[in-house]
Image 1 (cartoon, rainbow, N blue to C red):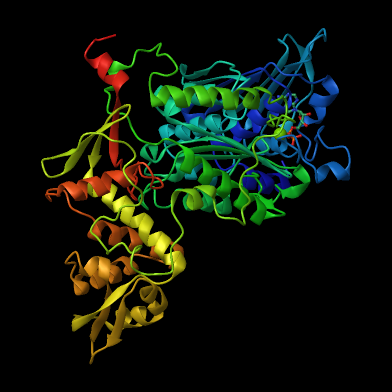
Image 2: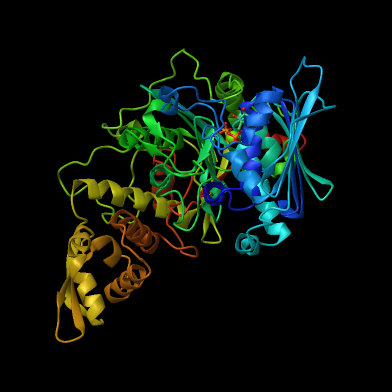
Length: 609
Ligand SMILES: Nc1ncnc2c1ncn2[C@@H]1O[C@H](COP(=O)(O)OP(=O)(O)O)[C@@H](O)[C@H]1O
Ligand SMILES: [Mg+2]
């Protein structure tokens, strides 16, 4: 097999999972309703992909392994409007150059099937054979002729994990196609054809995750976005759980990942990643998928618009979503719960409704989502602030008196919503309070942290935090590097109300310190030391993330602690803001601030129903 093919193969085929991807994409392009994938030794020894798609004629089959043989592009125009998954006509040629391949195929309605074997790069004769409708492609002994690449492959288990991940990525946008996956004779995955991506997610990831997901939908101009996103509580320790699809194809895209990070900012600890299944639909002419040989990275013509659109829909959805976890034990909810039984069931119902038309109409073979023509509520204009901001948090009055977080330990944002008996503090850590529809248990530190966090963020949009001059400046030993750091971050520190000046060799003096911290007895030196240590952990400073981290630390330090006794008025003030503050169900690190128990939950627990 010629060198060109081997080189091309090196680009596209890294490991068994890459072959699985190419073969399954071909099966999807052929309109298969069922695809059975079987591998041995993680795919290193054998990969078989069987489909019931359109099959090939003898002539098609004879050409399938020729480099640049593709039946999917007939003119140059199409090259720039790529809708099918395959299109370069190189995959099979590449596969044949680095493994022994065998294809058996039959078109529905044809009398005979045909087969073809390639061995050591030699393409054999097309022969008639018995075959069921569709195509089965088997490749053996991957990289048999390229020892360097063979050595690069990992253990069978690792390679199989990559194959499994590949099937996940390919099966998510094609819920109407049934998939099975078998490893060394044992079936590991059995995904029936279902009518929505939501159902496919349930089959792949289980009920618990599927039930927690929140639908997002937006359509603006040429950009359509639909998907399911996890609440902060479902976040994971890795970004692997962010499934992003463009026109039915799994992609990675830094810009869109950034939009996701941005949207969850203040809801998640920096080390946690939201779970998300996001499907972007775009006119194929608006995107270049040929940036990367395996098409996993793409380039958008108007990336700003897509970034803005995704960010807007995520923000509005997260602001509107009821994210508070229920205190009712999971076992209390019967499997056939009525729609109004719990928040989770509410979410399930709205999810079903929102997604039903949506993901049902994805037509094979391209697997694109069909955005129904009817109009969805328009997402907020990216240039104007998200509505929740202006609705929920009153604009900052010009005077300093009433708005600052340090005015009172806990500042009221609105009067208490209803006339209910006073709440009680238990173990100096939690507040139990009656609610119109049941009760809430609040983690006093977590909630206060969230409120202060919101206040700081709001305050910073108007100007720097209120600071006080320290009567006796606090000195701090710093390295030359740290001194330079303080200087280069002077502006950010200034916004936060921290003023630091040089004070002899290796020493700086903190002159001003934000009042909200000073009044809580937070030591200025210790705080700035923490800031410098934090900064040292950044490889490259993302100033947005740095500010975010510092605000989180400030909110944490200024908030009442667990174990602190609160007066009745402090409890009242804290609770009065619970229902009005943005994202109040979660602290800035994504931990819940409260648990809710409805009267229905109680009735069920006490067997009153
Ligand atoms: N499973 C399949 N069912 C039907 N036709 C197939 C299948 N796999 C490959 N082919 C045919 O072989 C051709 C070459 O496949 P490939 O090398 O993957 O190129 P591409 O998918 O980019 O067209 C395809 O264009 C298609 O005509
Ligand atoms: Mg292909």
